[in-house]
Length: 345
Figure (tube, rainbow, N blue to C red):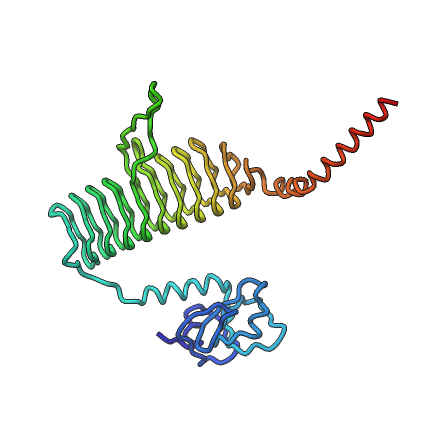
């Protein structure tokens, strides 16, 4: 699919600096640009590449002023990164959707399937399931009994959804993820063995949730594990039983949320963050990568780092002291020797 600069600028309400007939048919990083490619410049760290890139068109912020000649046609927009994302979304949505049910798919007679769906090879849809309109279930998807999918959901290859889970509209779940597996519930016995506690609840994903690849969201012991609308989870995330994740919260890869914790809305977690069980994290909390949260975060819009996590400014100040600890230790030893010597005298 090919677009010229005039068409792109019209869609983005941008200003063209250069040739309005410049054409692109692919995308590329600005540092890897080539003729026919569209790139963007949002981070000033990459500005040097705009003067050498071979991309035909580059999206830039409206306040960008080049410090040297630029060969590419520039389109000035309010926010280059957001505009680039909008273009990618437009291209993705313009791709033809698959429709139809593959002959190897197994759909139980009591299941209800909406219109314009795609159900790929070796998909299983269980008893009393509901698959909404325009859903896409790619090969080897498993949907357990009594599960409901809203409209326009996409389950990528190998997704497993256990029984009785509820999936909202326009949710996307990527390959290998498991929704509704048993929560980690075991009662210790007097003989040092553990008795499994039946997990009788379910998982609820509200509308417009996106789940990355190889994510596990455990079903509740009782009630529901709830992922609120607009949540985005990266790959390789573990969400324990009876957890609630608030609306529009985002989590990066390898984050773990232990059972019965409540995470607020509009939070942002870096990679490998660990949340202890049975705690509450306030709305708007931002947690840096590899941080650990052992207790409640009560203040909204906190920014935390470290383990146990503390305010990011305190952590940065503390990190300066951490680096100086060996030197400080040597000084303390020397002072102790001097004090001992003075006492002996």
